Image (cartoon, rainbow, N blue to C red):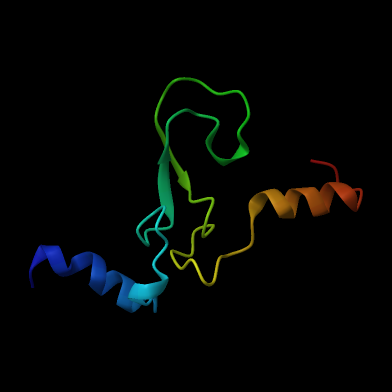
Length: 83
C-alpha cells in the first residue's frame, strides 16, 4: 500500500465521499487553530491548538456534520441546565 493513498482509504472506511470531504479539515474531523481559543472564539493564548473542526464538527463530511458543541451548550443553558 502506498502511504499517499492512506487519507483516501480512511475516508472510504468512514464512508466520506470525495465530493463531500470537509474543505476546512480535509476529512480528518480536526483542525489547527491559531490560538488556544479554538472554536469558542474566546480569550486564548498564542499557542497553536488542534481541536474539533467547526465546519463538520468532527464528522469529516461537510454534507453531514455532527451536532455543534456550541448549539448543544446553548440549548442546555436555555433549558436551565447551566454550563
